[in-house]
Image 1 (cartoon, helix red, strand yellow):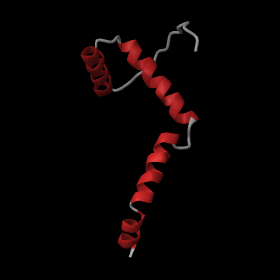
Image 2 (tube, helix red, strand yellow; image 1 turned 90 degrees about the horizontal axis):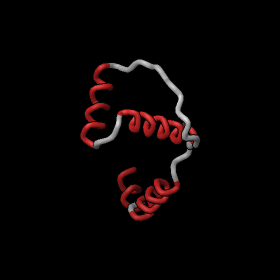
Image 3 (cartoon, rainbow, N blue to C red; image 1 turned 180 degrees about the vertical axis):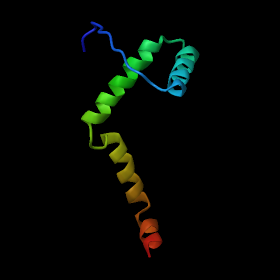
Length: 75
C-alpha cells in the first residue's frame, strides 16, 4: 500500500467517535492509526467473502471430533 495520505471527511455518531477516541487513548495510538486499521480490516473482510482457512480448519476439526454428539443431538 502507498504511504501517501489523502484527506477524508466523514461523519460518525458521537458514541462511535467517543469509543474510538477512548481506544486510541488507552492504546497510546493516534486516532488516525485506528481509522486506517478499521478501513484496512473492512477491505480485507469484503475481499474475502469465504471463511478464512484457519477458521474452516478449526470448524472441521470440531465437527470431526464431535460428529457422534451432533448426530445424537439431531435426533
